[in-house]
Length: 120
Ligand SMILES: [Zn+2]
Ligand SMILES: [Zn+2]
Image 1 (cartoon, rainbow, N blue to C red):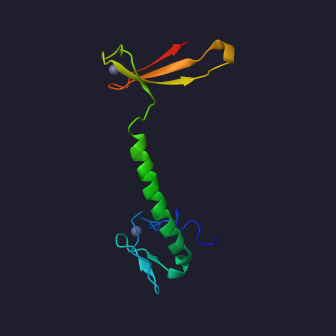
Image 2 (tube, rainbow, N blue to C red; image 1 turned 90 degrees about the vertical axis):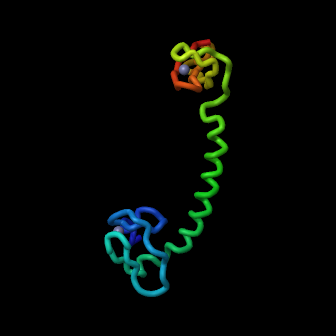
Image 3 (tube, rainbow, N blue to C red; image 1 turned 30 degrees about the vertical axis):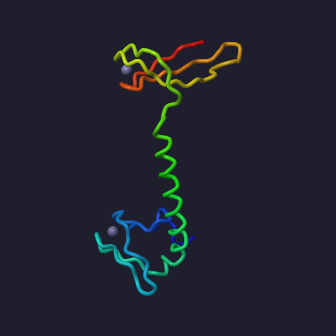
């Protein structure tokens, strides 16, 4: 693809200064508002369709992030943080070596983010 490198992503940002470029026009060139760099519209033609698709994808991703923020670090248990005394810590388990050696539990304080591990 000959135009690769001019646009680093399918969204139309100015390759020189990173500003969002003005809306695609049917004829003529597109000029960056910020650095006045001019793009010939022939470099631009195959971008319009992709731009629309990406816009929808971004909205979906944002919704997922909002849901995940409710519980970013896993289930929360009652466990006293040795650092700040907060009584809730989230935990995650990880099987470290072979199955008969048990697993390691990682605790993270929901208040100060202090982390500790416990082998079970
Ligand atoms: Zn620019
Ligand atoms: Zn803490």
